[in-house]
Length: 390
Image 1: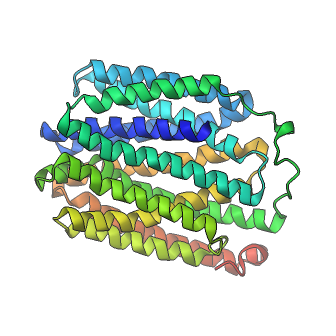
Image 2: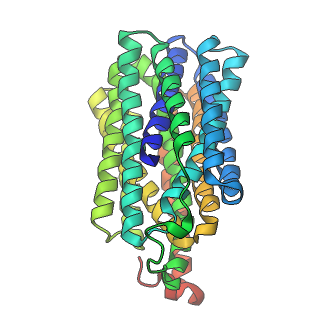
């Protein structure tokens, strides 16, 4: 049930984002408007993630998720009713971000409760596949619906999916931790838990830079696509191949576990992501742009799956809502920064400037991570937890 909820939520979200940004781009909305809209959405999501994660640990994860799904139905419905560009549209757009931020921290923490090492990896894999299938369906399906039916069609489908999400959560019963079939699995060794805390902080930086870059694609790539005369369906495919890449990375990371507690793998994928954003910056064809998106998606897939793994290992069940809420909040903050600063850059320096800015941020983030990780390894206090994990 939780995997279905993940698919429904992200498919609805991406149908909404794709349709609204494409309509504004076709109407020649300036890049700053698109960027500010995206920043408001993700900033609201980041705040909501941080608050709802803590709240779900206290009052119940199902209750928090249901409230988020209910708000999502209402806010998406308002977007359908009001003309895109008015104040009500912008308020509703921000409320969608607040709503989604209430759904994911409790859902992810439910998936991680009382599970053993391999069981948790399998659950995270299925969760990752589910929500990325939702994103993929939203990107590709949104382009087709937009071009072949009507510009409002993706929004109407999004509302329907949000209603189904709410119904699924209402019928879902939160398991009793005492009856979980994975209770009694071996606890995480303290050395691994300490190492996981270190890698969690590194993952926050990597996730921030990765989602900064991803949000420039979500909110500002439509402007470049229109300028390059790329049709909406091809625009959807360019973004969709990235989702397929992310899912392939999840599967590989579940099967091959050599990456765990080893920083070198993170460095490699971040360099590939940097190359991907450079390609997006210089390319003019759909194929070349898709190649850049694929390389960036290697970074996104690795960062997110690794952050789920490390947050699960670093925190006990009583704090998992808070931990995953903070993890999602860093993703939202990165996305908000990418949309806002990218919109400003595009307005002043052209449609390609946000992607150059993203490449620079990935490089700077990687340098900071390398410096921080090196200092941790040299510290006698941390040597036992990170000494052989480069």
